Length: 174
Ligand SMILES: C[S@@+](CC[C@H](N)C(=O)[O-])C[C@H]1O[C@@H](n2cnc3c(N)ncnc32)[C@H](O)[C@@H]1O
Image 1 (cartoon, protein in one colour):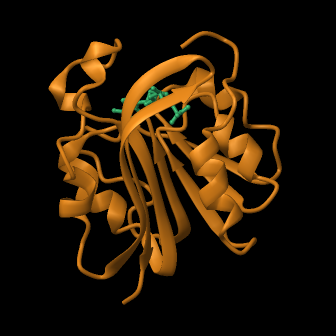
Image 2 (cartoon, rainbow, N blue to C red; image 1 turned 90 degrees about the vertical axis):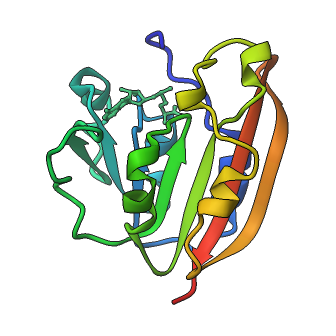
């Protein structure tokens, strides 16, 4: 990633537009905060990343709390006992903590997940299967207490860049 903050994902913005404003959104592995910044107009944001330099961009925003945390080591997440109205993950995958990510969603809250999927290796990085969702993986992994609102896998063309992605927008119903 360079210093320029990319625009928000169009699909993510469309899903956010369908959610009533207010409450909290946690942006998991937020990077430089393209989504945290945009959606801080609508929610109180918890922006989590291991890279403190990225988080520095966000620290002056009154609607954003930054959390510098390695999401993949043995340490308990400082926010793991909290629930959020929206859990957002984009362009990040660490399978061992997928369940923990779904657990952050409050009752009647939402998960919005968009990341690279198998086939993306034809277009560039990531090409390591550890970072590429398998066919229907988010759908198959989704706990039973979530209703799928939208699921997609296929090509994404945004900012003249092609990639293969998988997307899940789901609501926790019990
Ligand atoms: C490709 S960027 C995506 C950033 C943002 N979600 C977006 O879509 O613009 C991946 C992000 O994951 C973060 N990351 C990678 N491994 C991490 C870990 N173990 N703990 C916390 N953050 C991590 C990186 O620092 C980086 O900001």
